[in-house]
Length: 137
Image (cartoon, rainbow, N blue to C red; front, side, top):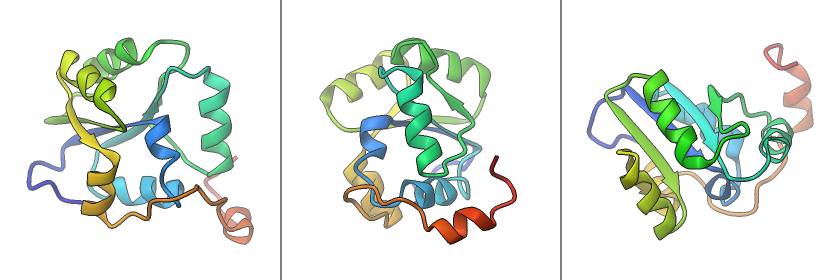
């Protein structure tokens, strides 16, 4: 995905948006090609985000932790100083949140179309590929 702007970007996915992608691990790997930092933000408890990211072998640069989404996005923006901060979400509430914390908003459907990511129920990564990775605990 190339939005035509700077690649000096922090990209945050709402967990619900990430769950609409068939291959969330590949999405993160792809996003790292044109983003400085990539992470997940959610109102869900930390263990829900952690379980999803571990299951799909996603290495994130940041996550919500015990904070709400607004506080998380505010903290991420202050810690990760990039030219752009883009929040990929699912609905008008996500768009309103992005605007309130001065992030760009991108609907997951638009992001997927631009980056050629497959939408659909997340598939578990190939077990053989997961076992051969040396960068995963």
